[in-house]
Length: 204
Ligand code: VGL
Ligand code: ZN
Image (tube, rainbow, N blue to C red; front, side, top):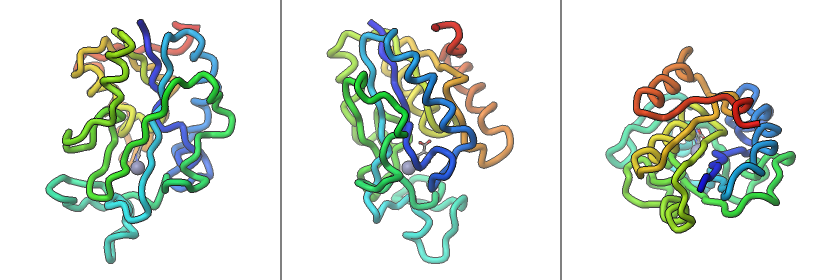
């Protein structure tokens, strides 16, 4: 059985959003076109409380892009984004929600960030996504979404580590590229670990 994981296809990660990813919205039509091919479709949703520790604005004098120690973990500071119940935290309006079986919110604990859809960045708490996929007898997962160099990468790596045969749909992802080459490096890291990299045309 095959599952499609849609990572953070939210307004704040698309052009005009609070943490906009270049061409982030170009992933949406591909996601919609692919959903029918899967037994299970799940979506992760970055879902932060307003006092979240990853927001630069919650740390005196800090600016987005700086790195701090947040409860023992290195944390890149971000602009305020994906605040629970806010407009920017909603899924992109063109995303077809009718075919999504379950939504997994993440980043809800103000004390720790969560790039992966499976665990927080300290691997302390699970979101339930892994158990959900196992219960549905999923063997293969396909990952797409935003952002390639953060949430997509860590979601795909955790999927692989949990024993799923894991494939990244490269053209259905876009990255932040805080530093030039970050997306390329993220793809290389995933490939090296054993994640298969494909283009959506290979499925459509
Ligand atoms: C993400 C930075 C902060 C992502 C989420 O979805 O990749 N990046 N929060
Ligand atoms: Zn976030």
